[in-house]
Length: 109
Length: 266
Image (cartoon, rainbow over all chains, first blue to last red; front, side, top):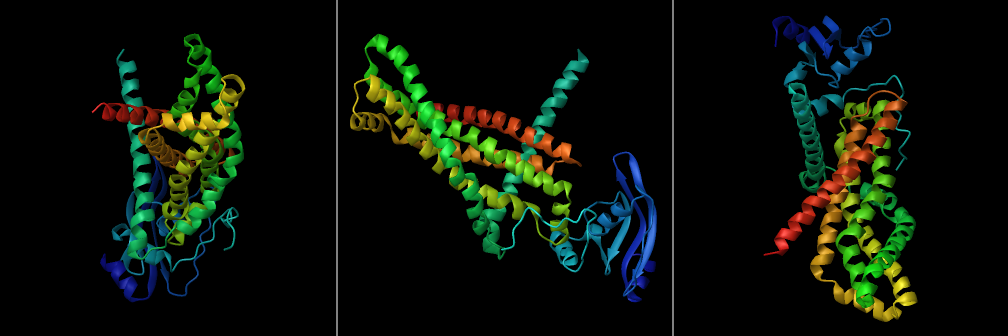
């Protein structure tokens, strides 16, 4: 774990992103993103349409794979987690999707 | 010339990659169906029951009608040649063997493709477009386990059941001609049909029906997962699911028919 990220984790950092790059084919969407999110901190990401907000969020929960860079969630490098470890991380994450994704095709029970 | 060869090569590799993707999906669904429950994960049999109702039970009326007519058509076409030989008594055996070995499983598969294969692609494709599959993954629910495995289990149970029903209805349809035109009684026609059948005629048909069910599930679900963005893509993937399923079912039919033919020679 990089030193500055290790120090961040010790300081109560929940999410650390270092030089994150995500590509769709030839087109790079995220160009080296860096930020930390501390425990109990609220971070708002604003951007124009197509700027990569959803791509960033999807990468943080493991729905997209970065082409470069690192994402640390509670001290764990997402690139090195197994499927089972990723599932454990996801159980602690809540995500609201743009279109709702409310499982309208399913029934209760 | 080189461009043509390159195009052929690209098409072949794409087809092989597609079959590989289907095989991967079937392997994963099989794991979640038959291995994962013994490792502490949820069993998908309860979900499979409701899928079986949709795939199997609700298909019975239309399947009965279609295979009854197929049996009647088969009897008429067989009689067309057999009467020249004075062998109308063989109509019963011709219909029974043809239905059991080939037409029962195949017609059932084509009907199920239209009803259920397209529905699988549309359901999963819609979930893909509305990000419901992403939501499942975010909640640590494996989409193949949750969405595909119940359908997979329902198909491998219901396809043989539907095929047996189709065979019966086909024989019944043929009996209508037999009684009306070939001097059979109902009892004698049914008895002639059953006497003509060997166990291998029925089992080969049932084995093929299971393979057809697996193929239809794999193609329908794969096309659903591959859906791109937008309503137009859902239509495209649903159409693809039907077309590719029909082709794959015919290909699987060819493979297994040849397999049983050469195995039967020994």
